Every structure is written in structure tokens, then in C-alpha cells.
Amino acid sequence: MKQHPLAQYLEAVPDFPKEGILFQDISPLLRDHFVATIDAMSLLFSAKEWAEVDYLVGVESRGFIFASALALKHDKGFVKVRKPGKLPNVHASMEYGLEYGTDKLEMQKGNGKKVIICDDLIATGGSMQAAAKLCNEVGYEVVGMACLVDLKALNSFSHDGMTVRSVIQFDD
Image (tube, rainbow, N blue to C red; front, side):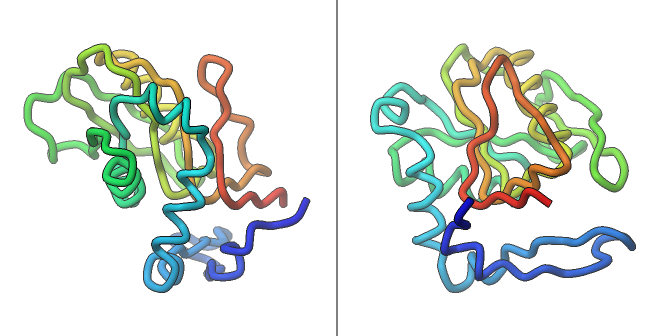
């Protein structure tokens, strides 16, 4: 499979944040190719799909970057999924597994609207799965999931039959 041209701007950082992890740093993309990155993520969904979405959900913290930019581009609202203690009026929370530990996410009450969940990278799928379950639990309808980078070798995640759409994929 041919890799997306933006993949060349990722920086692989060995042993970060823990030994044995090869971290894919998106900082060069954000710094030098932000508009192209958002445009590429936008193309993951059709015009019809964008028309049916109400909100973009950003998973803390780098998911905020992509979800808010896509919300602005498509004239949609933005909803946050936060780590504990950073969100008032929490309606639901969920613990999940990471490639290198565990964490927890929280959300405020939803309103039945349709959402696309965004994050920077999917490794094990833990945070995306937690965000999708939280969205459903608080009252949103998940109609799509997107990320910039998918480490496919580490996950086979899907939610209600939907897989995460990504711009850049690593199979090994």
C-alpha cells in the first residue's frame, strides 16, 4: 500500500514515552503542514457524511487540534472528551488501556446529535473505544471516527461495525 505523502513529515522517536515504544511525533505536521493535514483528514468523509454530522468530538489532548479544526472547516460544533478533573458537570467516565498503561476519560451530557470522534493517533484503540462508548453513554450517536495516524499492527478496533478512518497507516 502506498503511504500518504504527509507520512514523510512524521518523526519517529524511539523509547518515548517508555522504553520499547516507537512514538510517532506529529509536531512537524502541525508546524509545517497543518492545512494539508486538516484537508487530508477532511477527505476521510464524503460531503454527504459531513452534511449529516452535528459535532466533532476531540479526545484530549491532541484530538482537540483535529476536531476543532475540522469543526471550523465544516461549520460544526466541537465537543471535548477530557481526562479526569478537567471538565465540570461530568456525566460519565471510563477507564481504558493504553499501549503503555491505563488512563481515564470523561464527558458531559450529550443531546442525541451525530458525531465524528477525532484523535491524532490510534495504537491499541483504547482511547478511541472509550471515547466512542462514552459518546453513546452520554447521548451522542457516533457516525464516524478519524485519526491522523493508525498503527494497524497494534489494533483491530471497531465500534458498532465502524472502523477508524485514517490518513496515515503503519502495518508493522
